[in-house]
Length: 238
View (spheres, rainbow, N blue to C red):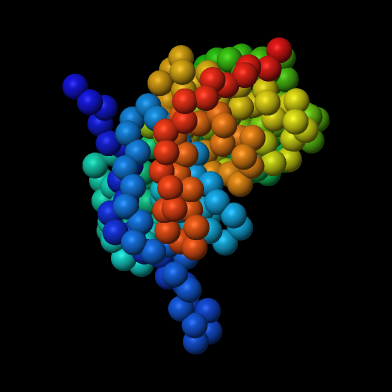
């Protein structure tokens, strides 16, 4: 029995009006991502990968076409419903971490669960478990300004996992990290994929990161230029 399709884009187009000019950021995109895949979406600046990330992440809706996330057509949803499905189905990891500077690591991880109205005691218990999992159990009461870049990104990973999402969407997750710390973060994402079966969608222009994915979708001028399976064996950092 095959894996279920988790994300599907059907004839998706995203058009922006730039004065009197229409810009097709994405043009007639058809793409399926199955549950448990590790997919890298890559391409040069202006290729459309950021637009695709926003659409897959329910941060925006297409100008044309349909996008299904776990069977729900998000193209027809209003902002309130988009926010709800985002909170339940997708965990985000951003280049700039996007942690709340006034909150501790623990409270940053609890925050997505607060939005889903999860019992505070249960939320705190789960947040502590997630921070232990990313090796930050001893830093949970520190604020982002008291953490290194790598530690902050690991808090962001814990936060992304807070609501047990179907998809982890990572946008240039090592962009603000040195190479060694970046390798550690990518190792952790690979562990989530390999051991817990998480679906990972990695958006990056960094070819070193692309090598971690099992499938690579390359965009050019708003279209899919290639969609290939990778058979490389990743090298885990020591």
